[in-house]
Length: 403
Figure (spheres, rainbow, N blue to C red):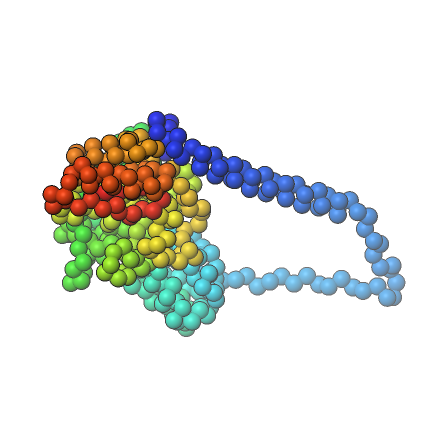
């Protein structure tokens, strides 16, 4: 993903340098702590040992060694390839979360446990956070175990990875074959991970239509795209994860309430993509154009979680392992100097040029004052002939959109 920095990135170099210095300071502290621990261990080993008890009638017999009974391994579902589950018993929420991530990664759709002591209500709450992966689930307590039914995207992925689609139903086989065809079409040799992600993002957003029809039983997973060309947010996530994984990317899903507009809180789902070891948010649904904006958007292509602190709620315990991105380094606009401005004249000129070309504009600016100056310039340039150009802080991390 790393590219040479084009002109214009000087606006963000200072911030990136500060982050790099902070990372190196943390690494140096960790190395120093490890060296101190090693020195202490060597000194302890070199210290003379006190003599043991003298032989005689008062000497105690050593305790006999006890070999623990082997813990029975849980059984796995047909897709797991015989990989053992990370634990035989589940008694805490953290263990259940860990087990679910293992099931998602391996495709194990059924696990038998020695014990499942998490309360049923807590199991339901945790499972709901993974609902973007599961169509349904069932928890057993006697005998203990969990069984899930994965969404079609995950089932198609595991079948494609195994090279055998024969066990799939007709609809899921269509998902597998259709997703592979899209990847073969848009992914070219030599693409970086960033370029692969962009190609898949644009293909999905351009070809699919968002729907909220509760009567469509397929819109909540990838089947909706191949059957009717429409999906809800969970369907977008299911298909984008499938496409990304087939292209060799690390892609996951998460969900939570969102308050993007004044209509109140709504449940939503979005994807996470890992680039250069950092997890970015990518939201194909919020980048899907509406009727009066027919072109594909990239407002939510690889943004940090800091951008959504005022509009989304999520549970950090359910994020995949690994650090999250803290800057816009992987963002769509970051590598394009035409979107960057560090003075009022450049900000106004860029915004007007973009508006003339496509009916919307984006700016990466170092402070809110420049963003407001560009908004004022747009109003003055276009007058008040029925047009309304309001600054939209969809992303609140020095990236602004005008329309």
